[in-house]
Image (cartoon, rainbow, N blue to C red; front, side, top):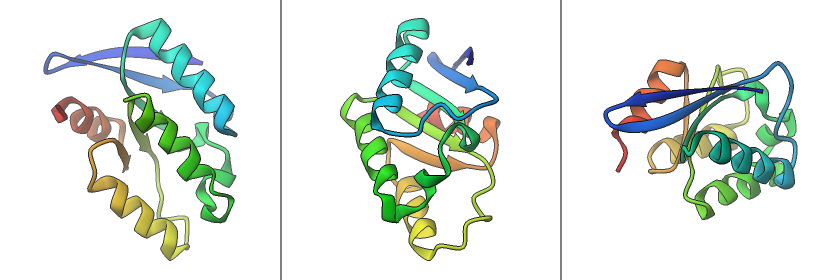
Length: 122
């Protein structure tokens, strides 16, 4: 796992990259959050969707809700970047829309969009 710390507008943001799936269940999400916060002291994280298990994007598994609730509980804001048009599920598209209209979880196309979004939040 590679973590780059970026400062924008006085906010520290961790940009995490890796060539393998890091988050496959709730416990791995908690471990991931703890590691990033310990190493960077950041409560804002940008990750590529490839770091998430594909079952995350199948809402029937409830994995997305359980994992994202942990981010919210621990007051960690996260932007997930990638191409989400590859998923045909209307429920998932609605879920992404709702997340993007909130203040904690975002699904965006590029790393730059993610950094800008996370840097503007209170």
